[in-house]
Image (cartoon, one colour):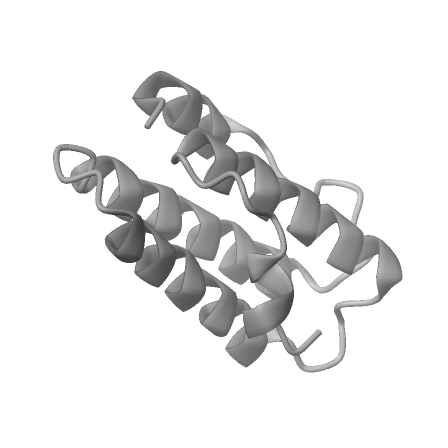
Length: 103
């Protein structure tokens, strides 16, 4: 797990160009920060099942937030960000996102 890279992801201003309500953008960003914080907090226990659980919970939260505002561009941006984070957390398989997302 690359903690420094995850911390850099946490500080990134994600999705600034999205044409979505500000509240939705705040909720999405908070979900990513919480997911990254949980990964970092558990970095001393690099268990792939725990990492996948944290990532899955993040995607499920995004499912809850989505009220139809996630379109093609947003979906692609979300997947790209999730792939980057999961790779930095030590998960190389990127197909996992599709298993859990509703958008």
